[in-house]
Image 1: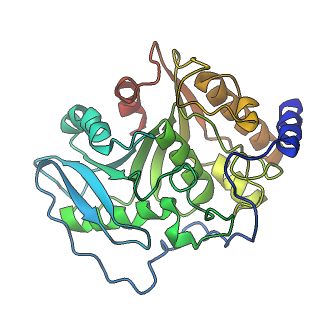
Image 2: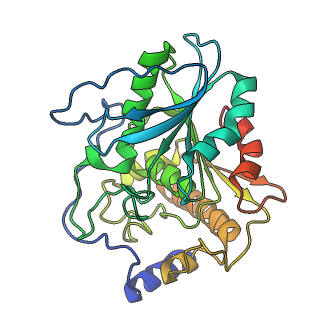
Length: 312
C-alpha cells in the first residue's frame, strides 16, 4: 500500500512525460470477442512466405502498413506454432528476428517480427504505449492502436502458411517488453498462450487509481478486466545485470523512478505489485517472474532464456 500511495503522490505532483489525458476511452472488446476489423478495408492479399527468412508488407489492419520480418521452417503443418517477437526502441526488427532463427529452426515454428518504424511510430506514445490517444490527448479508435496489428496479422499468416493453431506466443524486449505487458493489460480478447515481457524500461501498473500510462486510470478496463489480466499468463523476464541507472534509453521521469532505479528493480516491483493487487481482488495470480543470469540490456542474451519460456 505504501508503494501505491507513493506512486499516487508522485503522479499528483509531476507532469507526465507523455500526454494521455482528455476524453473518454472507447471500451475494450469483451474476452472472446472477434478481433476488430479495419472499417472499409479490403481483405489483404495473402503473402508468399517462402522457407527461411524474409519480409512482407502487412496492410490488413486500420493502421499504417507494417513491414513484417519473418522466419518460416521448411515444413509447415496444421500444428506449426507462431511466435511474435516485438522489437525495442531501435526498431531493428530484422535483428530481433535473426536472434530467434536458431531456436525457431530447432523448434520448427514461425517467427513474426513486425517493424513499427520510426517514420510511422516515432514516439513511445505511438508505439509501445499503444497509441491509445493522439498527441493532443484525444482517444483514438481501438482498431488503430498499435496493439491492434497483432491479431489480424496472426490470422493472415495462418491462412498463408496452412497452420491452424488457435493461439500464438508473444515476446518483447525493452520497448517491446513495454508493448507486450500493455497488450496483455488492454487487449483482453488476445489469443496468446504465453506472453513474455523482457527488460522493460518502465511499466503500466495494474492499478485503476493511477493515470495511464503509469497505471490504468482512464484506460479502457475496469476491476473485472484487471482481475482477468492478472489471471492470464505473463512472464516478466529480467536480466540480472540490467542494473545501469544511467542507461541512455532508460526513462527517468518522476513516475518511472518510483518504480525503481533501473530495469531489474522496476520489473521486480511490477511483479510484486501485481501479486498484491491480485490478492486484493481475489484473482488467481498467473504472472511469473524469471531471470536471465548475468545478462544486461541485450535482446540476444535474453532470447536464449526466453526461447524456453514462450512455449511453457
